[in-house]
Image (cartoon, rainbow, N blue to C red; front, side):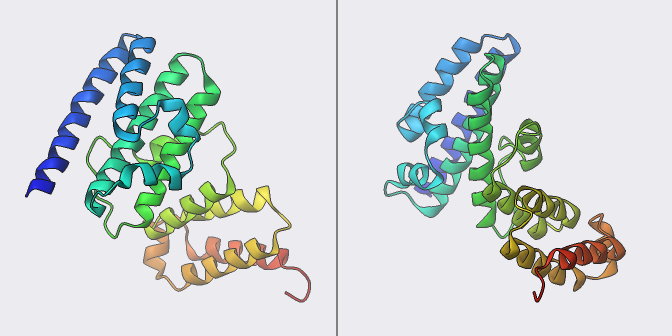
Length: 224
């Protein structure tokens, strides 16, 4: 009960903080919003927004764990993801595109890592959606590992067309990567084991999935 109350207080504090930040954003009071966010980052992770965005996911999680339960760490990670998205918005408002990208990308990677450990995707309403963060990074080239995480997420969520898009984004980045081609072929094997109804619902009808499989087979090295 004590742990549950602590998590509920954490969520309530995050909602209040977001209301304040959103008010400052609407008024374009970017410096005040940045200061408010830095204070929240310091409280949660012991560093400001810029420093947090440059830490690896492993380093960030190490700062959040500190003797906490798995459930508490999960919620702290979701709050941190939300803070990073807001910091990305504020940096964009201050015309600092590189920092904005760092924050959005870190938020997306943290969110995808959390989703990879979830059986059911149920998060508090304030947590940014994957698509929102992907859209914020639409003009940037994503790292391979982010595309791989996106592919895994979309496949698990049954969004096979977007999983395929993530696969081909990786293939475009590394067209001669034979291991990636084999990885893609196993993806299509899983897809083609699905029912026609499941494939149609995921915007990837069987003929399109079969064509994708053939494309990868054409990319296989001779003798592959």
